[in-house]
Length: 371
Image 1 (tube, rainbow, N blue to C red):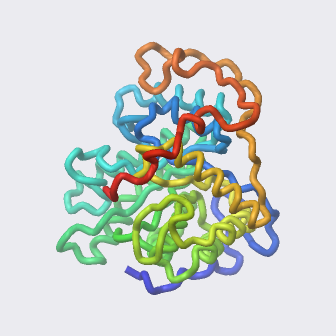
Image 2 (spheres, one colour):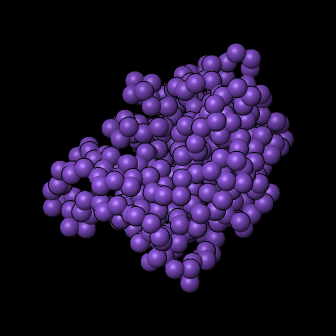
């Protein structure tokens, strides 16, 4: 790992991929677009989760492909995806596709198999999942597809692990390039690709392909990067395709509700606005699904106050305040959308959003630290 090595600054004149070149000193100040990850709403049906986020006023959603929401292995995946796309459009929600489901491929191995597994067939299964995710993202009009390297297997030397990662990602990057959807790799503590410096190693190894971008997790920056989180945002700007955000403490990889950690969020949000980044900044609290509606409301309120403090106020009304257009009704067997449960959305006209009123604080603390 290169955890002690500062991430290199963007080279002079390096073009950004799929977006205008961010330059903190000259880029226009643009509104930050907030989303919430469905891995933090795992106890809700997908339709209910999307309604909740729209009612609260989020701009979008980080949609984790998993069996309880949108199963990437379902035989009718294309049809389900079309129905989700219609729902997102009706609610005015943007989307990024995330692939961090714990047991979607193997019910006994968390995040297994990975891109680093010794068995080439197992690596191919993970690559196939990512290619499926690229197709879903293209059909949803998503900003990016998120992924990660995985933990190096025991008795695998570092050079071998890096070679496996690059080789296994090659067909995924081809699919991403063909679909016009960037693949955004996330540095993850404890993984082979753990830091911004590691991302640059992969980028150079692959020849800096246009389809390869970066997922920056703000908490992970606080956890182990040598730079402060706001400085990480500025250093990562040319490659930034997706942002995840939560609170965290130095040296401890635990996703915390906002205010429970050590991060200077006004500085982070100011840095994001200065770069001109226009993708989603998605709250990631996967260990808090038991009180997901409460934490979704709390997170948005906290980030609005932090953005205002940074001089970049966010709207305090829902993203879609006009009635959504009528959408075709799905078939009765569709598990992601039941017209009786999800009728045409009624606009929220002020006061506490109805979902937030149901999301009382009692019992909203984290239930342990299960990874």
